[in-house]
Image 1: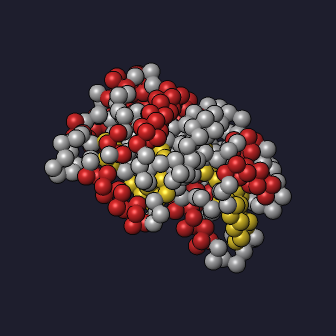
Image 2 (image 1 turned 90 degrees about the horizontal axis):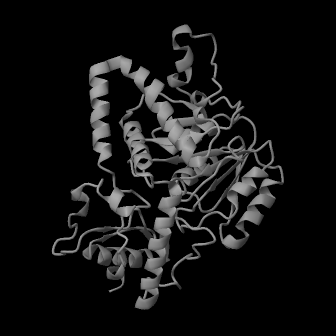
Length: 392
């Protein structure tokens, strides 16, 4: 599978990044930004020619062909019963804020979340908490073994209008234990959002039982490998929220016969925004189509990455590295639920920065979050890669 897929990557991605190092680049920041397949270049060109040749008529192709095809691809990957419920936007923050704007902020709003959410949502909550009627409860993620029980106990109390949690936590790589089962049992009155950005197209995810119970957000920037600018949020059928933050795309179905007042449709357009650059849509769809042509599924990607991670751990255990070892690795139980990256505690932000710089000298590219160093795994890592250079 690797050999079939790898040929789609541009040679430039393998050029040396560190002067004086002859080793090829080992890209281990793929949890942050996957390399793009070559089909994305053709997709950008296709979008340019469509926009240049069709002008305003391009909307017919985008809304009539491209968006439905992308929605079907997302629905297939997540086992969603209604592709038309997949809303699109340039980033997940726009979609989540549009959801938040559907609540009456003149009334009390109680939000349940964890202390391990990504910066964009965490920052937005801090700002919302400045309002006197917004209260936020953050359940500590650790210990992870009891997180599901503690989170569900709070959720079942009936005190919250909105719950928000990550499928895989961005700082540790740990998958939220039993999150989908918990979502299936949530109180009907509470809306729930699952941040799937580190789960989508990495961990096999079946939303069939909760598709009409939760909003699920993710995008193409990371594991799909199609770049920035194309994100989505799945919408439960029957959703009646009326976003205050709304755009003219939400009236697309009635644009020629606009009625009085602000109406909302019953599909993804309820959460639609306004004019955007749709070249990211073309790129994301091209990658989905490539995977279909090559017979690559999320399950096969996950199995491949798990083998890479096991090989990494075996090499690490034999190396006895002072920092990259099991004592500093936040989680390494691959069977109980883990994302496609490992996170190591480096003792300090300076320690993480120094280790990142040392690895870069060996043409190993990774990233860090304060005192945490993250190492990711992808389908474009060779099957014979031992990861030995990280430990020498």
